[in-house]
Length: 417
Image 1 (cartoon, rainbow, N blue to C red):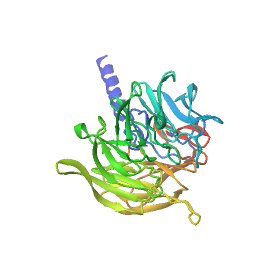
Image 2 (cartoon, one colour):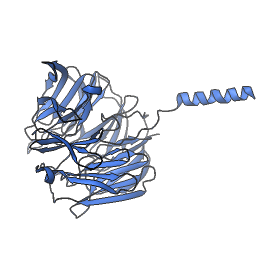
Image 3 (cartoon, rainbow, N blue to C red):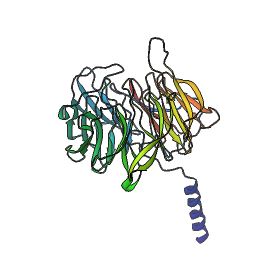
Image 4 (cartoon, rainbow, N blue to C red):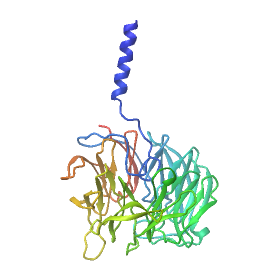
């Protein structure tokens, strides 16, 4: 009996030793660490990937998110000046609840639905609509907890393509780039939607913020319409700013951390690497490099290790310019372009780093590519068609399933061969 118990114990140890990393939720823009990364590993596949379910959803480029067995999507209600947040069972696709609300009338090029991605924290989902309506709902039933029309309340103007800042939750606050005078960046109380603090006069952009640093040095970094700027998330005090203005006023990418550098980019400005430093006893940043050719449109770069950054650049639309999204491998410390894979997409492709440091590339034409990062050349491991045209939303990876939103549907596919 003792020998049998020993064998059973040894078998369990062996199973645990080879078991995959526990599945992660994807509860916000760019994933659990807000850096385009997952701990889940993805192996190369052959042929088609299995579609688990597909559900029609309303207009919008907001990315799907996944938390505690639920998948959420933010969309426009057809033929109405309304938006809605819909919750599905993440495994089966069964609709769990649907909550809609009124918004101001709005029309723009490239769609009229929500662009910002919601965030789920401690049983609440926070969503920021294309007309600036910030909504807090209960995750289980979809009941409204509070709502603030930020543009109306703070007397701020909407952007040409609509508000697009994916909310960042830090402690008791929800942070968004509103863009009003004295209210560029605003923190709302998570419990009731009251304004906790407001900061700066910068206009808004289409970018979303990240957290950078640890402990007392932690800062919320925004790419506004005028600067890359870091604020204390507790009170909104500006810690440093670096001028960055896109001449088309279309800054859209999220700042990216690679080692001790921060990368910021836009479609006309190019890219800049910023290094933290101190000046007169205060934190600031200095320009480590600038590369005006690395023009990210609305695809956020991803770091692989401390030495390399992968990014998708775009072209400025024009009568004599054919749109092309190109994939680059960049040396992080210098901004040197090591290689380029042309026409990976038309306008856009999303990048996602897996747990074994491979890259998933989802093109705006609906192709999913698994590639092996290599500083010398593009190395494609697998490819499959997974969605339709105008797949502009970033995908979400959770528990071996990839959630993809194209122009019409929310699609769940198995990423495990």
